[in-house]
Length: 138
Image (cartoon, rainbow, N blue to C red; front, side, top):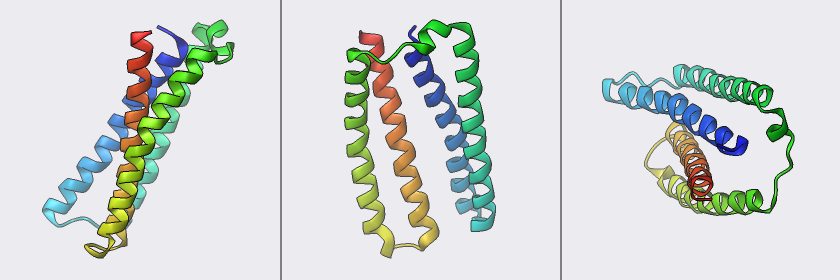
């Protein structure tokens, strides 16, 4: 498995676990009527820090285990995979952002911001998933 594919797996798993927890807690809070913006702002900070730390730890450990792969520059195939993945994620982000903006009149700012956050997270999941798929096929 290539270093960049391992990094994509680590990012995908970290994002799914971290933000999956955040959005599950948000849905539970909405269902029980306890969705206070202050609590979720703190939870979001914790989730972002945990995802960042998890990805950094994995990157450091992986770079120590395979330093030659970690130092290797991106070749033409890596750049093509990244471009395809970014293109797929862009359309998801565009549709999600426009949907959140269009739905702004339905809810308050708290829900619009969480809709935008969900768009960004979904776009990143699509991006890393597409990268993994292309690395597995190569």
